[in-house]
Length: 280
Length: 314
Image 1 (tube, rainbow over the protein chains, first blue to last red):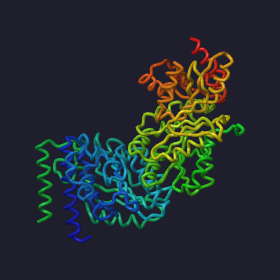
Image 2 (cartoon, rainbow over the protein chains, first blue to last red; image 1 turned 90 degrees about the horizontal axis):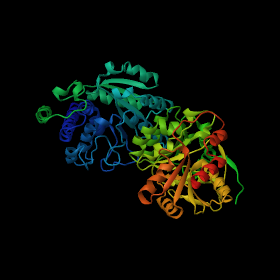
Image 3 (tube, helix red, strand yellow; image 1 turned 45 degrees about the vertical axis):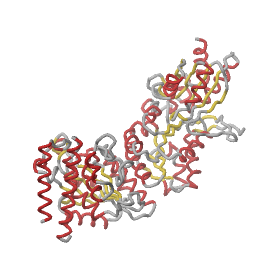
Image 4 (cartoon, rainbow over the protein chains, first blue to last red; image 1 turned 180 degrees about the vertical axis):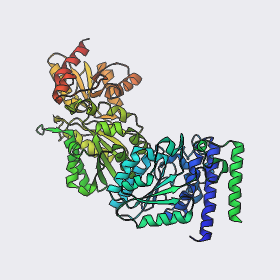
């Protein structure tokens, strides 16, 4: 990637993070930690990788994105707003009564949301169905499913993994946002997820491990996934939960908590400073 | 009227799917390692490239169906009623019901007439579970001809539908020449003024035999075949309540949450009358031959005749 392109991507990701914080702050609830850890990958997908058009969100030939870790929708909503799927004003009414933006993604109510999700483990199965439909229709769209690392504790993830592999869904790319934390603590203290790469390998996936905040690595991994034929790919992206807001980084407590007014100010000041530095 | 034949509604389902698929390439069938039992194998043989076995993973099967539906396919996902609606309840609620996706779920081997497999496989809760999901249509066809029409109607309806299938071969009683199926419209099989019997699914024919036999004893019972549990036909229930003064429901399902309570919800709100619920009285089934179990639980014609007579004479 060219430096200028990386710079633009970083600016967009910074704006996505600001939307996520703004949404959660105004909602007085929601999930900032995982939204921030996923922000770079989601930004890359919507601003470079995926063949999508905000003016035609139901295009049958579009690439699909399923946020299987649906609670991190403040990050997704930020990317969709920035991309122009809906006015950015909607972010402020996230989780409010009558709002378009629900606490978890609602495909019926929000343009750009390809699948309702939030009950963990279910999104990857729907992504398998989308990929299967693509094969059946001989279309060349790709399907991206983003999972949390904690989410991989759900049995359904492995049912879906078996299905994807058995049906040779090479148009499916699973991305695990491996931020290492879940509600009750460190993922490996709670349920012992590792070795996650070996597990996916055993289930027939091509496994790529990257730094989920490094755009060159994100791009290389997504490009490599497209060359893999006959089996699905998983990108295990090591990320920092709460990335971009100092006091949220690697802090278990910021999984599902809104910042208060003081904390909100600090977060926005930090993100604004990052944006200014990028624009300088 | 065509000659009666004996056929399990699961078989009718498989045949109907095949017929429907001829004209509709967007129909895809999923199963969870029970194709031989749910009879989706009939479809599988005819359309191998449109059939996907998900293996023993009902939750994933429902999610895959949701994804297919989001891309314009019309998936029919089949398993035993127990696993399709019980194991995968939450997947149906969140991945299919909430986005109101066009997924059809078929639950075979419903009720105690599963027989020898026993309690773990005798699902008497599927109608209750599926009724609770907003926007879900719940169908329980009573014979071959009704099942064929129900499958067509479920396809024509744009949204989630649950169809209950039985394992046991049962006699047909509908006349294919005149039979009409409409979602949400009960069918009066016999008029009567002393009491109304409302039955659903596999036991409708048993109830028909029972009410006919009761004629000789001077009991003139109306019989309604309620093939749609949701949306329930309010009008036919209110009319029956007003005209016959009391109702008896008959179902091969727990009396909690199924047809009986659906009928009660209508009568209590619009026309309170006595409703007696014949069905599985909040207990588990057990192993045994299907016909023996139906008799033991009072759901065969003889048992129903006795129960209806007792209730009416009380």
